[in-house]
Amino acid sequence: MSRPTVYIETYGCQMNVSDSELMYGSLAAHGYEAVDTPDGADVILVNTCAIRDHAEQRVLGRLGELRRHMKKGTVMGVAGCMAQRLGPTLLEKARHVSLVVGPDGYRALPQLLEGARSGERTTATSFDLEEHYEDFAPRRFDKVKAWIPVQRGCDYRCTYCIVPYTRGAERSRRLDDVVREVEQVVRDGMSEVVLLGQTVNSYDDGTHDFATLLRAVGRVDGVRRIRFTSPHPNDFSDAVIAAMAEVPQVCEHVHLPMQSGSSRVLKRMLRRYTREGYRDCVARLRAAIPSLNLTTDVIVGFPGETDADFEETLSLVQEIGYEDAYTFKFSLREGTPAERMRPEEFVADEVASERLDRLIAVVRGGARERNLRLLGTRHEVLVEKAARRGEMLQGRTRDFKTVMLPPDGVAIGEYHTVELTGTTGSTFTGAVVRDVPARRPLPVAGAPAPAR
Image (tube, rainbow, N blue to C red):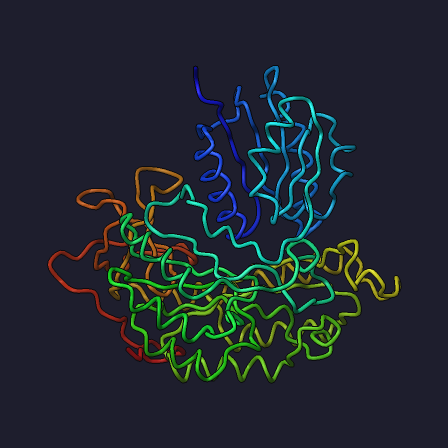
């Protein structure tokens, strides 16, 4: 008798990717076989994001498209943050969906699917603040790096953000459990780990903080690179920054969400830091790790944002010099505190769109100027995957620059010293330098000197 097949389609952040790996692992242990396409699968699951309205509308459209891939008896389910937020409403919006399960409900997924295959339509969206899926064996998509959740949920409750309402309160895994998982992925052949949390650097298992966690992971034999995402500017203690600087495996890149460069807007967002506080965080990080590369998140058009507020955002983006930025127009999420803001404070869409275009131009222009100055420098590159186009392979430097390499004599999972030979402004092409160890790039005008 053939095994039932399951296809999972994932949207949103790295935490959702990790959750899909957990679901695949659990279902494999219960006799399911993973497939790469939805055509004729016995189970189709869509793991969703709720961070913006556009993301939800995209998923609703995709659910309609996936219907044509269903055969008689196929179970269609929706998982993740959108499932948690909408609950039974999803069963009403999409009559072909049988199962809605939130991020804390995956332990019961095999049993829920059995019920759905018998004709039941079920919602499972209760929070479980003790759940970390410690006994699950993830089926990892990536064979080069491993996503390692160290924390679930969020306590910050920024006024625009739906995450605390879809993932619950913040709770951290025990340090020993994290280290044990890191040791396992090394045995499985991976040398880069990415520690995940909604505010990952606020990690606290009751005994150990994030600085201790970084040092513990760095002591695992075989770990060559440590990354983490996404931190909060308020949680970069002196101890955390010292650990970042002193643990050689910690990469020289931080994704540091800014959201706005205006203290007035930051206060309305309930970000709990000011423009000056954010600048101080950047200064402390760069003082400890001068070669640090920064990326960020920025929201434009938040209710009440004036032209002057937006100009403050542009000026801070130019001052800090981000390598890249995820930029968004404000998206109102039902149930967040921003919903209670006065209608007259909301920024017109055409104004927000114009601001977004200007912001993107500033980010890209600055990154291109800095990247052109890096041509000819050499870096250690980990080859991660085949590029989407052509026959090139794609890799990353320690500081998170994307490099395209010709495939001759290069394999996925290998580390190479690479000379940067060209740039589109955002990504690089490179050539492998044979028999030469990787070195740090030389200082360039307008950039800090290498530290380590």
